[in-house]
Length: 162
Image 1: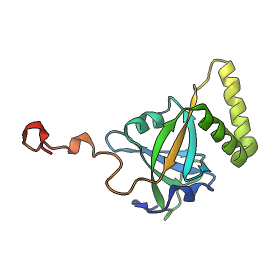
Image 2: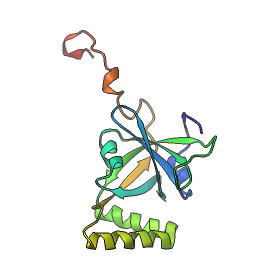
Image 3: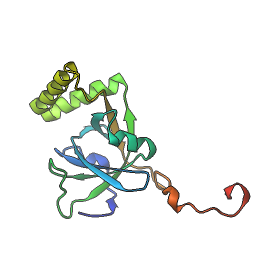
Image 4: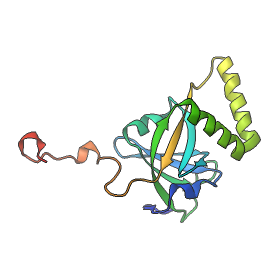
């Protein structure tokens, strides 16, 4: 697998069954997770529990990397890595659109997972509410997030310099 993200658009991965979504801890350490994705115009959508580690990491570092993978998150040798930026969306309209797109792409398997979640919720074992992750291409220019705090060095000027 390539280590540097390619310039491919994130939507190139919309047709893949599984995509490895890599989020980043504050330290910069990558955390990969295999996910289902659907295309939504110029973006990808992913569903995840609102309390997931992905959501917590994305709230402070929106930068992500994506690569086609198998259901266990294994990426084939030479597979390109695609850079992206994610935002967490919880509005009802996005949730409805995401459910319809997922049901259309993943069919019966998606419906069975939704049923399993509904049964778990009734039994008091629910994972909580779900949110959508909307992933788009990164903006041109400087990196999406600042360097880790450990790389910051004071300028020696009052106010930290500018």
